[in-house]
Amino acid sequence: MVLRFDGGCVVGLKKFAVVAAVLVLAGCETLPTGRGFGAERANFAAGSTLGADLQRRDIEALSTTFLSAIETGQTGVQNPWRGSEARGVVTPGEYRIANLRSNPKMLLAGPAGLDIRHVVETELGPYVLTRNSNIRLGPGTDAAIVEVLPSGTGVDGVGRVIDRPWMLIASKGTVHGYVSQKLLVKAPGAELTLAGGPRRKPYLCRAFTQR
Image 1 (cartoon, helix red, strand yellow):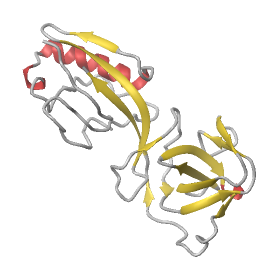
Image 2 (tube, helix red, strand yellow; image 1 turned 135 degrees about the horizontal axis):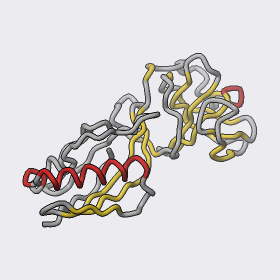
Image 3 (cartoon, helix red, strand yellow; image 1 turned 60 degrees about the vertical axis):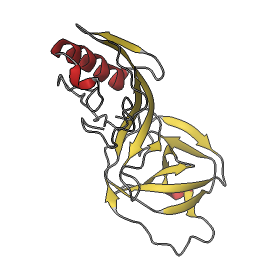
């Protein structure tokens, strides 16, 4: 038999969302910094009608391929697997960031390699860049530059790093990276908003599809 699943985003070994249709899985798996998922043989087809019928060797084959694809696979590149009675393909997708909004399950697109080890103060509101600014993967000048945003760009402050003068910024549902806080000013009309909101630990997730 051939397993067919579409859509999803994987965090830890538990799903953020439920089965959307008989053969459609949706969720989010975390990609822990500094360690992989390990050798756990979870049934990553669980929740579908076919998942319950997988034999042990099928589950092992799927699990090995799934974990490798999510951790190190190239976006959009298919990773085939074959067990004793089933076969399939896992295709890793884009990276997502969770736990930055009031709804912790709301996912924001984000760059690969983003440093999410830090607890951040969230819900900071709109800001404007005061000059051309390097946007980095981590909160420090030694972190890699992802892009350069021009002066006057409006951004959303989604996370101020605790005890560091760096801000995690986003726009239109996409996290760009970190910028030095001294390069930001409150957007006009937002100067009287609260200084910050709840402290949260962001989670790096990755979208995927299975067939």
